[in-house]
Length: 198
Image 1 (cartoon, one colour):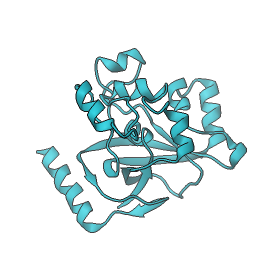
Image 2: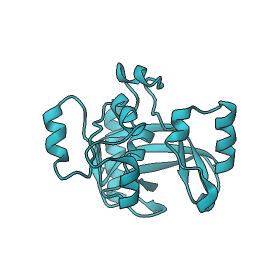
Image 3: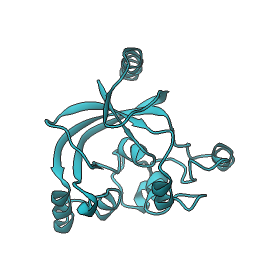
Image 4: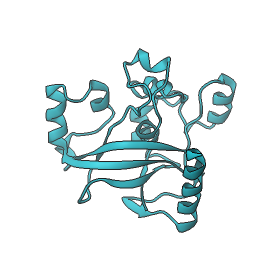
């Protein structure tokens, strides 16, 4: 099985189901992940591919500034994460774990781990996603959570048909593009899935 490494908060927003009562505040679909389209600068051929979703351990400094003020995540990321039961504190802050523990209730964002499985459906050019947004076929929140500006080069929207969290997340190193999950970790995923089905 292949996996795709994504930075936080995008990894969690693709996998974690939105829950009551938080989801009502942003009109999110209860019981489903908020992010149903992943934006990438590259694509793969074919659809309906089941892949692991890996949350990167680190983040590019420029991307971090775009999503965080250094203490908490900016909107719409903060509200979206809280709606899924996760803390909106900056996960790269040196006191992150302490802050989350002191705040209670909301979970910390996992990093450096496989956090879920997703079935990737259609992959379309970014301008198609822009047209969907203009027609109201996707929400303003979904569009804001992606990056479809083709001024820097081609962009693609990877449609997510179905997503399932891996609980607990499995710590492992991630890589760029699609990468092969090691056999021992694939076995661990299968065991967790079998346990969840019981």
